[in-house]
Image (cartoon, one colour):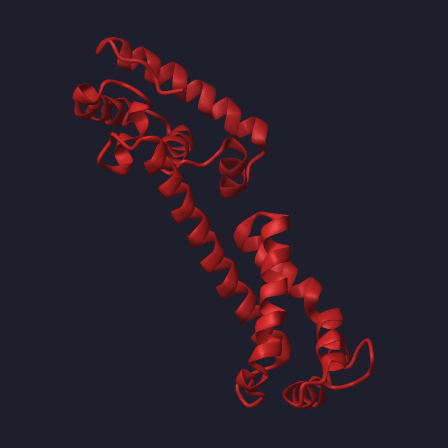
Length: 198
């Protein structure tokens, strides 16, 4: 038997699962001690945020406490089940956070009818279509790395720190790419008498 399935208290996962179905809080505590670090690692890989990952871990073990009957030992180990739960919950949270960011952007740009119009950032709405078209044309000339940074900043509403996490690069690298992209866009948009959104 896998020794990690018996540590730290030496009680097999299958026994803990049965005790959990009987409302044994000590069984939940043992499972938490045994697998919290693993579920945290899974959640962090998805969210890129320690705080979000810790919240996912709490949500997972609360759900396990409320639905212990959902564990089926014939379909896999407790470790694998918890990993799947953590991954799914982390994906859901990431999607929810992205949706919330889009809503906040929409509220800040209430005069603009679509998410694309985030890029106008206060420009006269009469020139919105022209600006979006010009920005798209200018972005087409960007290297892929700079294009990704601009898209995440202006069209997805991410902050530079979040962009760096998403791309798996240092924050300074993301800032450098953004600076270079803005210089390129400024030169291209100057011909249209427009400015790069702040």
